Image 1 (cartoon, one colour):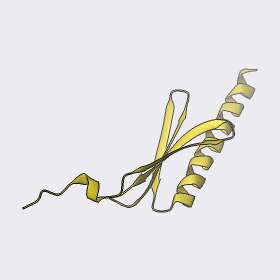
Image 2 (spheres, helix red, strand yellow):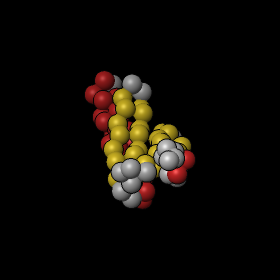
Image 3 (tube, helix red, strand yellow):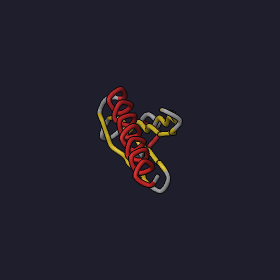
Length: 79
């Protein structure tokens, strides 16, 4: 009898990407199948999950744009 090995599953795929000067990460999950995205902007971390890589990329980019808009609005109030 052979023990199941983690090597039977495809290894996770990790991508480091950038949008508007902000780095974000994509990690392909095997179970459940899909893509996790993580955006770190300063001390703030935002993440999500999608079954589609394209949707995960768009969600990460939207999170970055939202965070950058919020930062611009705060800078405008402080001036």
